[in-house]
Image (cartoon, rainbow, N blue to C red; front, top):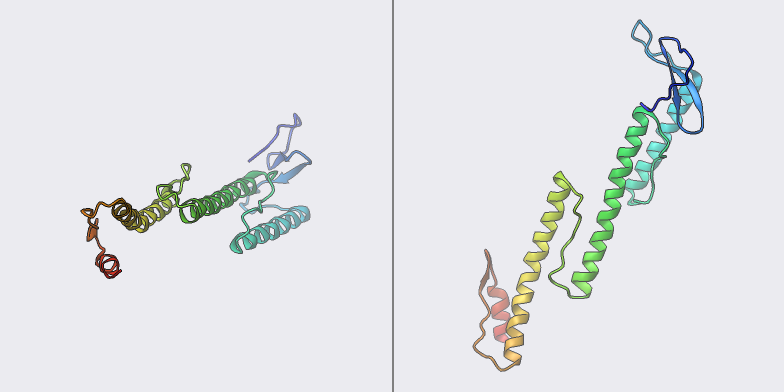
Length: 179
C-alpha cells in the first residue's frame, strides 16, 4: 500500500494514505474482523469499479489506448498498474502484427518475423506460433521463387522439391507442371 507517515500519531486502526493530491485516513479492520468503511470510501469504490468496467469494456472492444489512472493506491493501484501493463502489451502486439503484415505481406520481405522480446509465458508462445506459421507459409514461396529465377536465367536443371519439411507440395508442383 502506498502510505506516508505524516508524523502524527494515528489510532491503531487507522492509516494515512497519500496519492499525490489528497491525504485521508482510512480505517483498517477492527478488532472484531469487520472492516469499517466510510461513506466516502464506498463512493470511491463505486467510482473505481465504474472506471475499471469502462476500461475493460474499451479493451474488450479493441481499444488498446485506454489506461487506468496511475495515481491509484494500495491494492487498487497495483491492479491499475498491472492492467495498464497488459493493455500496453496488447497495444504493442497489434502494432507489431501490423508492421509484420506490411513488411512481409506487402513489401515482400519474407525473412522478417514478429518481434516482441519482452513477452513471457503464453504471450511468448503465441508470438512464436505466429512466426512458425509465417515460416511455413513463406517457405514454399521462397522455393518457387528460387526455381523460377533459375529457369528465367536458363538453368533448366533446377527442380522444385516435392516436400518442404513435413509438408508435401505436390499440388503446387503439379500446378507449375501444367503451366
